[in-house]
Length: 184
Image (cartoon, rainbow, N blue to C red; front, top):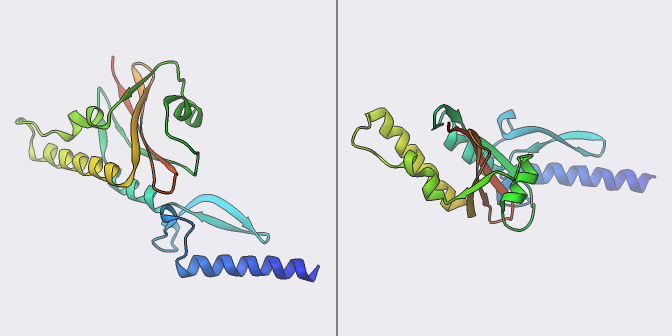
């Protein structure tokens, strides 16, 4: 029994040491600090004590890039960042539907450029405020291309469409930016 306690204690101490020294399982899990903003609501049970699971740095990066940014359609909707740890393979409409609970019967695939064309292209009639939003979308598209590979856009439904911009990190995790579009 003492050996079990020592092993559990060693695992707990090693986990605490690694969390404090900056060691991470992969580049997606880098922490920017130990405050509550860096932690999500999930908990990991280690040695009988709950320890918060860190929010992946890549999720924070995309949350910051989309904070306050609305996607315009007949109604404007915010962005939500989704993350799946090592789902394997490449994103497909069927896999994204299974992970999100969407109905894969009515799905449309678009390229990243086609999806963001209206939001990331400046127009002569844009006011300065509009141009600020266009620049933010240009930055978001560049960030997506830099941080993710195998990028796809899937739009599920009609009229109220749930759009997912999905890509794969270098560690094999999936990140999606989700928004809603209204098209009547």
